[in-house]
Image (cartoon, rainbow, N blue to C red; front, top):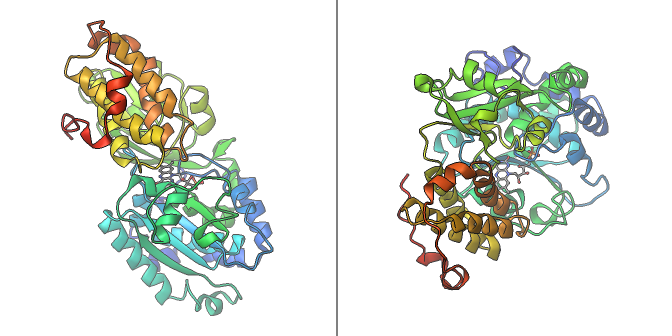
Length: 440
Ligand SMILES: Cc1cc2nc3c(=O)[nH]c(=O)nc-3n(C[C@H](O)[C@H](O)[C@H](O)COP(=O)(O)O)c2cc1C
C-alpha cells in the first residue's frame, strides 16, 4: 500500500538517504514552474488540511495576496496537543526533509521568504530532531541564501524552528501567530484571516505538518496521481494515530476512506481480550464520539465521518472497550479543556469549569438526571459563542457523548433532585472549582 508521508525507507531522516531517494527533486521541479502553477496543481490534487478542519490547501494558498509590499510568512503547525493526536511528531522523527522540501515549495508558491515550524515546547526530542535535520539542510544548501546556487533560482527562504511553551491553545492558528510574536497565546478575532493579517500584520499561511509533507510527492508524481488515492473528495493517505483499547496502538498511514473497523481490527490488532467496543472518538478528543455498536461501514475521511455524525479532525482514533467508565472519560476530557481554556471568552472560561464540576458530581454518585440536561445546556451555550474553536472542542464531547449514550449516563445518575442550578454555579470563580477529583 502506498505510503506518501512516511515511506518505509530505513534512515530516511538522514539527508544523504533522503537525497538518494530523490529528495529535493520536487523542489527543483517546482522552481522551474510559476508559483500560480504550483498552487493550481495542489488545488487540483484535492489535498485537504490535516490539522483538523480539512480545508483545501491549494485554495488557502490562493488567498495570499499577490501584490503586496509586505513580507509574507508560512507557519507550519506542529503544536499537536490534542489528546489522542500523535502523528506529526512521526514526520519530525522519520521524514523531516520531506517536510523541509514541502516548506520550500509552499513558500515559493505563496511568495513567502520566511517559515516558522512551531513545535510544542515539551516535545524536546522532536524539537532536537527537527533542528538537526534543518541544520543538515542548511549545510547542504537546501535552505537559506545558498539555495539560490543549489537550485539555480532567484528564490530563497529561511526556516526556523520555533518552540512553543506548551499550550493547546497555541495550536489554534491565530494564537500560534501571537505566540511567535512573543505575545500571550490568545486567539484573534477573525476576520481578518491570516492571509490578510497574519504574523506582525503581514500575509501568512498556516498549515499542519502533515499537510505540508504531502506537497513534494504531489509535485513529483502529479496532482492526478494524488487525486486518485483514497476517497475522491478527500484524497491521499491519512496518518491515523490509534490509541486506547487496541492491541497494536500506533500511527498507520492508510488511504483516506479506510474502514474504521479495518483500522481497529486489522491494522491495530483488535481489542484486548476480544471485548466489545463501547465508544470510539475518531479524530482527536474534541470530535463527536461514535457508539461502538454503530461502527460498521464507517469510512475514515472528512465527508464520510461527517455523514456518520462526527469529523476526521486530526485522525487520532481513541478506542474504548465495554468496561470503560465513560463518565470518567468525559470528565477527564473536560478537565483538559478547562485547563487549556485561555480564559479570553466567558462561555469557554466559565462553561468548561461548570461542566467539569457537574461531571465530578456525577462521578461522586451525587448526580441526577437533571445534570445530564444541564450539561447539554452548558455545552450549547459554549458552542459557537467563542472567538476560537476551543469552545466547540470542549462542548462537543460533552454534548454528543451524553446524547449518544443517554442510556449509559442515565444509569449513572439515579436520583432525580432539584438542583441549585444557576445561582450557586454562577457565583463561583474558576479557581474555586474542586479539580482534584479526576486523576490522570
Ligand atoms: C484549540 C485549537 C488547537 C489546534 N491545534 C492544532 C494543532 O496542534 N496542529 C494543527 O495543525 N492545527 C491545530 N488547530 C487548527 C489550526 O487552527 C489550523 O486550522 C491548522 O493548523 C491549519 O492547517 P491545515 O489547513 O493544514 O489543516 C487547532 C485549532 C484549535 C481551535
